Image (cartoon, rainbow, N blue to C red):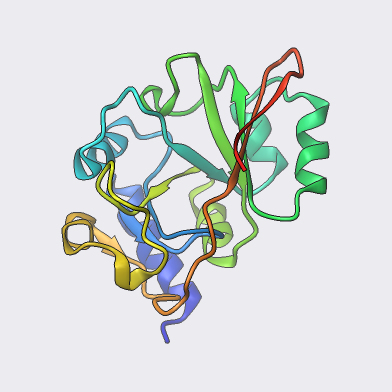
Length: 189
């Protein structure tokens, strides 16, 4: 088994040079890059054959990063995160300091705070949020394990993280949309 610090180092070297990685998250395997790098984000859309009008989720490693991207975070956001039993993605209004092409047309961005050690340590090195989108061609089923990821995706990334290749993942995260008016809407249970 590879060492987590070596994998963080290798992934960081790729990401800081604008590359894209295939990596384990707190839910399903993800394709990721620096969430502030528009060119890197474009590579992911191209690999997934996905229209740029569909936004992607961004992972963060804590409150400081959240406040760097959102000036105003409704109080209820923190309550939901405290209470949620499983990984929860929040869609929040008016993101800033991220690539324009990951922001949805209604000027929102889906974010998830992760404590999964690989993602957390990688973001500590990056000091930036990490794009996370499921490791499949758009419209195809989301792979539940590394074995289910198509060769096209594996060949199309710049680096495959050598951790948890045998882990079978549960479902993707719950998604909750929160307006600045504190309206709460569950998008995916």
